[in-house]
Length: 476
Image (cartoon, rainbow, N blue to C red):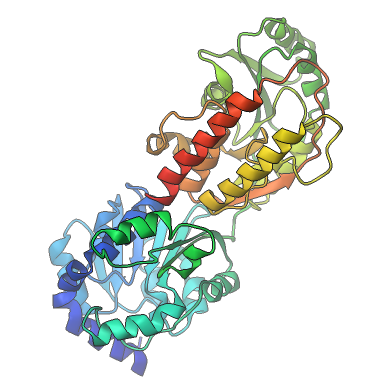
């Protein structure tokens, strides 16, 4: 493929800098250290990773891929990368060459364009050509400089503080999102980092962690990160479902849960996880199983305590392609699960969260202080997670078993921290870069039993969750 005049200038500049690139990285180690740390948060070790515009291969190596492939326009950059990282594969070529991309033997779990989009002649067409290397679970990670930093970076080049570059496309994140939309990709996460890209006697770290992460201020950061997923082939083909119903002292709701549950798929498993009730809940479950022999209803008894323990045990034993949680108090109507099934089966989202705070509630369904606390925590978690959440504590949550198994395998990042079970799934979905959508539901007052939630004890736990999430998600 013949290179344009601009591409030839980009290639010549990269060939010239290949031998000194490591020196430039060392000179700006604070900037690169933070960038690499966040990229390791976005990309788990052991994945199949393709980096387009890989330079000398240092980022690809730090991500510890099971299979790592790097492509760069500069033959000198590729030569350095091959010498430094012989366990990875590096190819020289133009990533806008469709034939080259087709030869890369995909698919890949992650495709990275780190500062590469600024060098492309046709951004939309290049992104379009990536579909041949994707599965529905593939994530595209695009990193770039904020456009309004251009004068500062140009000055840095003139002062010898930044590696020289040629003419770039100075794109806003909104521009990039537009290109992704044209190419049938959907953004799932945005982040802004490094309001100060220099150490400055140790102040850089403090400012970036505790000032640069604040709402509005973070939009002034140098680095923009965008994660997207392919929309093509996102729909699932007649997936089976496990509806998990954690229950403790919910005898009066057990049969209603089954009677009211729509038969929204051809293969439906209902799994009760009983939490050592004192009101005959377990006996009632066995009665219902005998009463509905045509349904696949199972029961497990918790080993530990709390809803989180019940969810983990139930999901570990579930057989459905899709996993759903339905709280046994039935304050979320079982009939609404059809909406959740349609959303995930049609590929609209990968983690579906219910929201009780959109429609008006039935009288006494939620006390005013609980409502106010939920609103406050939803705002905080929306900021912390870079995903819109109006109701983190709605018990109805849905995801695929495949994604749950990956979440479970990577639970060590957060640890066993969540007695509710809600945040274990929410934080895990964020770490996996899943597409999150919310489905508003009408929240009803419980008809049997008493709430298991203590507003003050569990409110304190929620505050601890905020601090925990801040440490793990914002200052990592």
